[in-house]
Image (cartoon, rainbow, N blue to C red):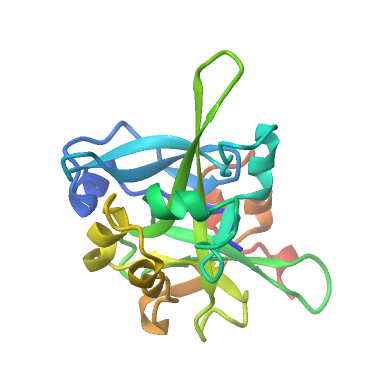
Length: 228
């Protein structure tokens, strides 16, 4: 599961990395949580990319209650092409979710689970494979939502958590975003854990456990009272 992530990179860096003509003035986010708006990158009809905000927690078009989104924040890569909640979006509405880190919680011998922040060694932004949907609200407007695809953790992260986001290398972005590609045989092989050398993780304060805290303090080392 991936239940929190970060996007603190400046908008101009996000525009450069994702080859975007423009990026909204995104504030640094240190503790992005489910049901909040997140940045997503999609392909327009002409093939160029655009960034849009969508609520994290996918609401399928057939849902009777949008609160189902709080249970659909992640889609397992192993079943994403088959599960009714995700299969249509997997075929037709794929996106990239920019991030520069994510959090996972490791079991402790005693006491609360211990949060860790996982990121690339160079701190640069990366793309998590995502899906998006539109749900019509009663007034006739649309609710735009998304979910993050997850895969089994790599060997380095496995002691902390058994799952991780599906991070796509840039050479696979065009294929993932291609509206004309709908075959699982071509898309599912992209959903792999990243090599151990591409990620590092460090313990952080349990401040991140509370979604109302969204500041650099979430990345601070654990204070003495939280240490073993």
